[in-house]
Amino acid sequence: MKVIVHDLDPEEFLKAFPGLKNREDVRIIAETEGPMKKCIGCFGCWIKTPMHCIIKDGYDMPLQFTAEEIIFISRCVYGGYSRFVKNLLDRSVGSGTPFFEIRNGELKHVGRERKEKRYLNFNVYMYGNNITDLEKEMMTGLFIANKSNFGPETTGALHFINDVYKEVAL
Image (cartoon, rainbow, N blue to C red; front, side):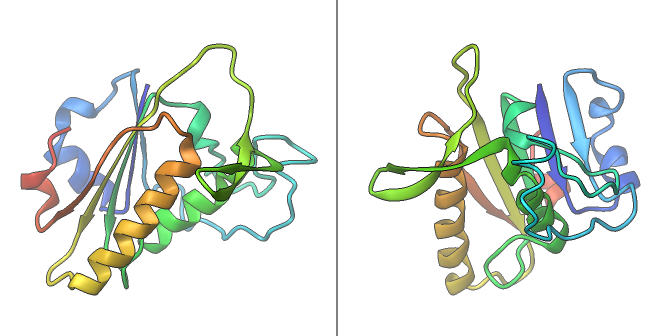
C-alpha cells in the first residue's frame, strides 16, 4: 500500500495525477473531510483506543501501519510542514507505544510489534517559491527525525521543488 499525504487542492491533484484515482493500492489523504482538529495530547490513542485517535473528524490514521510507502507533499512553512500535514503527523503518534528506547543516541518511542518485518519508504516533497537555505536546513533536520521515528530500516529522501505537478512523479 502507498499512502500519499498532501495539502493541495484535492480536485486539482486528481486532475494532475489521474492514474491514482480509484486504485486499491494507493490511499490519498487530503483535506477532504473538512478541517483537521489538532492533537490535544490526551494519550487516548495509546490508552483508550490503541493506534486510533479519539478525535472523530474523519482523519483517524496510524500512518506507520497502513503503508509500505508514504509520500508527503507539503508547502514549506517556516522550515516545516504545512498545517494539514503537521496535524496528520501529530495525530499518528498512537501508532507507536508510550514507551521509550535509545536509538542511535536519541530517545525514541518503541514501535508496536509487527508480525512480519517491513521496510518503509518515506519520501517528502516540499514545495514553495523562494525556500531559503535556513528553511531547507530546518526541514532537513525535521525530515531526518521523522524518518528515524518511522524505524531504523526506513529509506527515502527529502526533495525541495517548485512545481508539484511537474516535478513529482507518482
